[in-house]
Every structure is written in structure tokens, then in C-alpha cells.
Length: 83
Image (cartoon, rainbow, N blue to C red; front, side):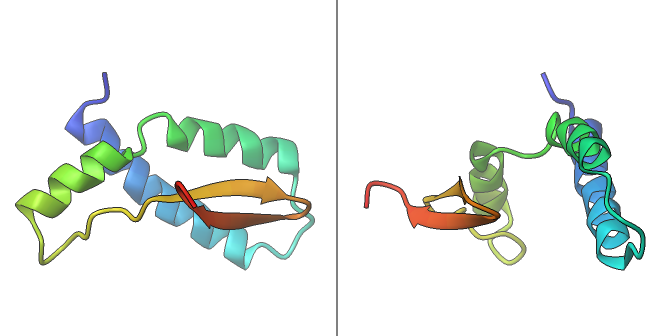
């Protein structure tokens, strides 16, 4: 079970991770990226968490769209669920 502190830490560390990737000038080591991404996603909020947050704080959060991200070659594409 993910605790609120772990969820908040996952959000802040993911932001830092993405900033680090954005500013990387060296070749990216994809094995390391996958390892760090896996660790960050362990406590990352799920859609149910986002829906609860949106309900409690509608000026801060919006409910998640029903979008599914699937790998397509070298990119991730979005598909509307049920469509």
C-alpha cells in the first residue's frame, strides 16, 4: 500500500528525473532509465488517486482522461479508451 508521503515523493522525484533527462548531454543509458522509471512508478498516483484529488481539489486537479498509451515503434501513441 502506497502511503501519502511515498506518493508525493514519487511526484517530486519524477519531475526531477524528467528534468535530468531533458538536460542530458551524454548518451542515455536506457537500462538505467528503465530502472529509475520503474522505481518512480512504484508509488506514482493511479487514475483513482487522481480522480479523488480532482474531487477534493477541483481548482488544482482535473480527472484523468480515459486515454491509453501504447508503444508504437519508437514513440508512444495515445488512444481513447473504448474507441
